[in-house]
Amino acid sequence: MAVEKEIAKETKNNVIDMLLTLIVEELSKDLNMDPDETFSRFISSKTGKLFYDDESRLWWNGPSYIAEMYKNEVKETRV
Image (spheres, rainbow, N blue to C red):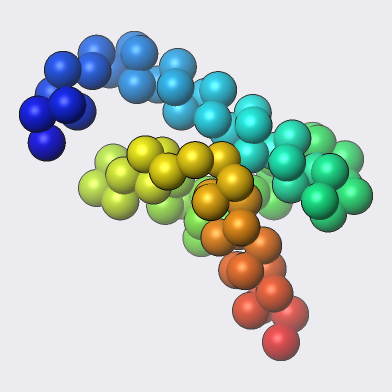
């Protein structure tokens, strides 16, 4: 995409880091978990791996969308 080519790598990484902070905050509140534990679980999840996959472009979505995707993943693994 043309927009993505215009974004400097450093800027993109900063956006991803800020987005991750918002995701962890939301998940910590929703799941009543410690932010450090939430961060570790999110990063090691399928959703977390997709979040850092350049091809998936998951980071283009908002934090609530990604948090909901993670919560659905957690629900599916508990069933």
